[in-house]
Length: 356
Image (cartoon, rainbow, N blue to C red; front, side, top):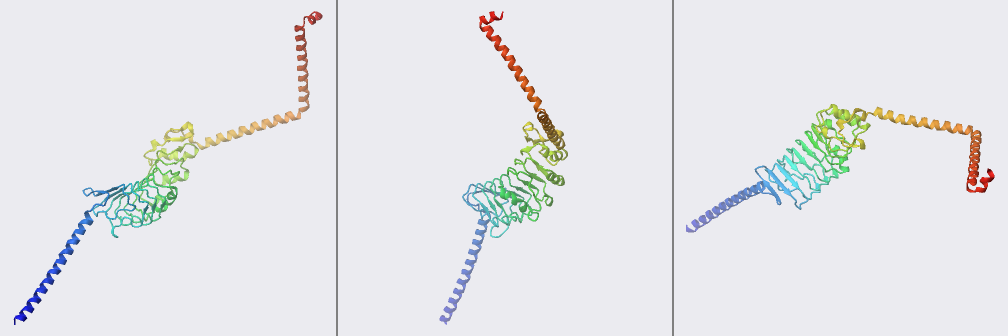
């Protein structure tokens, strides 16, 4: 009987030990999950400064060549500056395949050269993207795909010639249906980029400090059609000649250029520094310039005709002209002989007495 009781007692202890062990494992797992959750949500990435109150994470001058992958979930503004991120790869801002709450993303001064397709996936609430002061050589046609709420895109001092040509394809309506402001300052652009402005909700296009010398009639027609867009064009070296006439009248009659008073001529020398708005109509009158050119051509033709007639007269009267020249030569020779004789008399007194 005692043996049976000991067996039952031993079985109860094993069962109890098994239950306790399971509970310990459960609580340990819960603790690990809680600890990992707190770490994921609150931990600040290495070489970064985090301000949870403002939702800002700032990472400067790091040695990393990729975007930090452990950005806190509460981050609304991410600033990466002075790093060595040469390529923005697909899904560079997706953490474990999940979307983020970022509304502002600044990537200036990072030496970015390539933006691959779908580089900004996982940022459905992004409103502002700053890619200024990089060296972009390649922008994929789907580089900005997924930025449905983007309002402002800054590409100041960033575009190299190959990327400039690719920009129009990258700025598609499917990728950026709500883009309001596009900044392209300081990119040495020689003309207004051929982007399909009519397919955007664009309100402002900043083209200051480029290399735009003239805006032709076709571009001016586009400006008239985009009445909701404000164009910023100061600090461009405008050549104030006949080719600027259409743009001049647009500038005078439109309110689409808020910095119109800061547009000045760089050429010709006589008009350097003169505000485009202050030019006189005759300064840019193509008809006057054409008439002046025609007048000079006509004058040249008349002078050439007179020269031809004069040469023909000389040729037809070559015999008489030859006799006339011979007569003049003989007369000059006789006169010189007289002067020579008088000179000899004055120099020799004996000849003078003989003459008397």
